[in-house]
Length: 195
Image 1 (cartoon, rainbow, N blue to C red):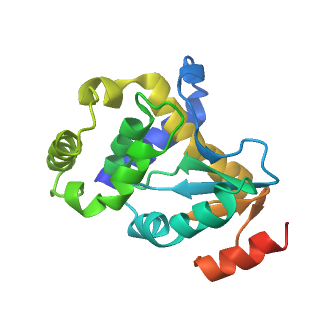
Image 2: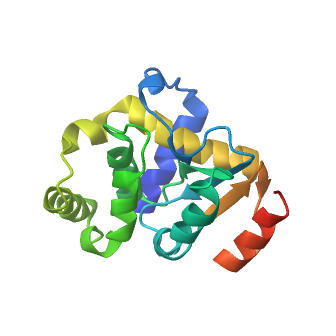
């Protein structure tokens, strides 16, 4: 049912040509030098365990070797796979200053908030996690903000149209889809070829 609701929202968003009014206040989550030679885009869903593994197992090394050294930047784009991921994406973008703190916390603690059989139960788990993690956001305001919702859904639509994204995480390096098995060794080999 959750996936049907998300599918309906995406179809509605694609066919209604909603403009992202106010999306200029919604900032893209990027870490690294904005003018870096290597630009990485990560399409992710906050309920995807493989995306959480990317943040736990790959991102720290990527950050240390390429992002913190100014060689690369990474831009996180939303590709929610269900309504719970859509709501979590809205929270990550709400009160966002362009940093990845909330996003990383949601991935690193995914098992703490993805609990419940219904979207209402998952939302309650997410609210409790946010409070326990010291993240201060107005949950209802963030999850009902249309400019944030449009921003998140536009990421998903653009990912499908521009890069043929059909799974998460999907990595784009300098405009090209990374097609190998996603682990740090394979990613590093691809990045080294671009330096």
